[in-house]
Image (cartoon, rainbow, N blue to C red; front, side):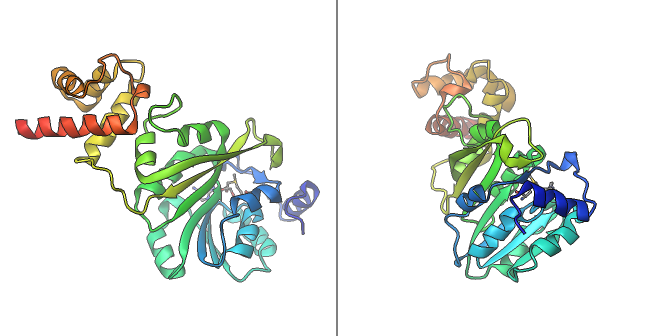
Amino acid sequence: MDLYNLHHIKALLGRYNFNFTKSLGQNFILSREVCSKMAKDIDETYGVIEIGPGIGSLTSVLATKAKKVISIEIDTSLKPILQETLSDFDNVEIIFDDVLKTDIKKIIDENFKGLKVAVIANLPYYITTDILMFFIEKNFPIEKIIVLVQKEAGVRLTAKLGEKSAGAISGAINYYTVPKFEFVVQASLFYPIPKVDSAVISFDIKQNVDYNISDKDLFFNIIKSAYLYRRKTAINSISRGCNISKEKIIETFESLDLSPNLRAENLSFEQFAHISNKLHIIQENIH
Ligand code: SAM
């Protein structure tokens, strides 16, 4: 069966009386080429975790390349469909659960011994950021994440601090990973067709985070605060968000030769790190 042919897909879904659940972000990919490009670096040395296999279009490409694929799908009504479409593969296992509630560490330990681990998925758009942060912040032994997301989210999620499209989560993303915007995928390559285009983005997980940041929580808090009130000066927003007196932040900016008029989007990763380290020292001296 051709899982990328709309007529075949409609016939398949019809045979199983499948109804789309809009709230689960179910837009199935119609392009084998996109799936192959997402899996281009995967070979027998990899175990892959996939989120939301849908009818198995990306899953089957992953299964031809990786040693083993574990896919996590929340919608149990896809079970008989996946049993049919993936019947040729003995290296795929489907877990029916909410990905955010699964024990990823256990899945990796039990299935991927001696393998590199990649997370590859066409993500449900309603929960893109939550899923990404779940995989990025939890310190799982993962090498890379390659995901298909809405284009606008892709731009935001791969922005560097100091760029206009960066946001509150750019701190954690740039701390733990090297993000990359790979390529745009037209909306017409999905069924049903979504309102906006999508994009493939990737994150190489840094195996050693070697930044000299003395208080990681303070560092992330400063970035979050700066972006929360992004129209205000960074001095004002950091003071407000972190509950630190304005005088101390002005003193910090002066000592680093930073203009008091800078806003979040003008500050680079390194500058945030310097602000955070300086404020940490000032705070420590007070206590
Ligand atoms: N991989 C398929 C493809 O590319 O055609 C389907 C992708 S579709 C955008 C997203 C999939 O994620 C759907 O199958 C949906 O049911 C599933 N999903 C939604 N929320 C989920 C969750 N919290 N945990 C696991 N799967 C989820």
